[in-house]
Image 1 (cartoon, rainbow over the protein chains, first blue to last red):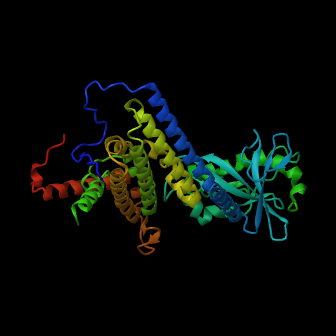
Image 2: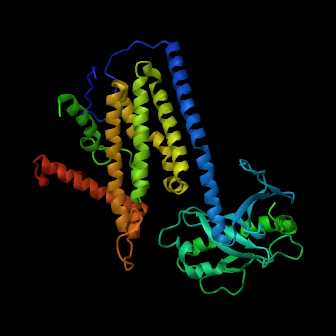
Image 3: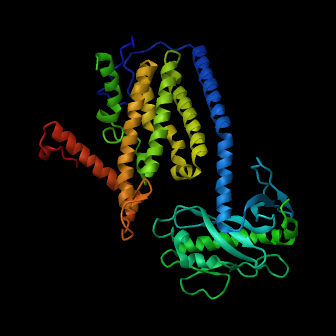
Length: 245
Length: 213
């Protein structure tokens, strides 16, 4: 190193005023040249990083989604992604498609080893105590019920709100939570709702965790909103999903 | 060690010890308090910052003679943001769980004052190698600071260290330590310890501490 390294030992390095008096102005060309050069270098680095990690990121996202679906539908061996469109149709989402048409609801069809439909999984969002609670739930067409839930993301209080992952009594609500549709398939026959701890009387109610009522309600609302939007469109078309395509 | 080696070592230790970003300069408190709920989060955040620091200071230093002072802040921010974006993708590729745990704080490295401070105060005036060594020292110092908080908070707040349970099943975690207030408690305790230590080393009696009103 030929150049002496400067001594900023005693200087706290925030907003140090330049000491020189009235420095000459830099030519406009130099500024544009430097900014252009920096932008070009940085552009290359970003594109390189994006392309270099693209496959790994996509694989990670897929694994994370599969894990969440397999957790709520243990019999599933493979999944396919679909959207239920606003008009009522169902369309498959190809690999690489990320944009979802407006009004459409995304869901996953899970298949077992022989390629038979093992269940439907969908995400739901409810306002929790600290932030939105995003959950994944499994739907079983045979019994028209929710058969399992998993948390996709939440920021609930550790030790209190996060009991929705661990509390066995609470999770027992989701072995057969009733989400039957009305006879005309327009909406759920009964609204899914979390009720006060110990007062669950019907198969469509969720027994809330004592002390974590708000988080429990968020789970109930997440399932209700998502099921209300998805099931009326999905149930009439279930036949088309029965076999893996 | 010969003189040149000593100088390099000194340059490195500057950030690790004498000007430790967390304990001495008290910079970059936003990620320090927010992500240190576990040791692994703290290390990941520290290493991500270290990488951005070293790369951006290297590039800032390479460009220092081409950079007119009128546009220097724009140049630094573009360079820093570039490496933050690269780190962002890299963490998504390594582990989505980690990416979710660190949340917005990866992107917020862009405005971490340690990095802009290093670029402005050191990298812009020095050749690439010393600039990168100095930056690496700062990054290591930051990582040590985060780790010091992360370890204490994880042990007290969850009873684990790097995810391994330390105590028996009877341990009741001190939950507040992994909540935001716990970050302030632990940081305060570390700062207290460090200033007491520094005073003792300087031979000053603890009693004559400047009163902060």
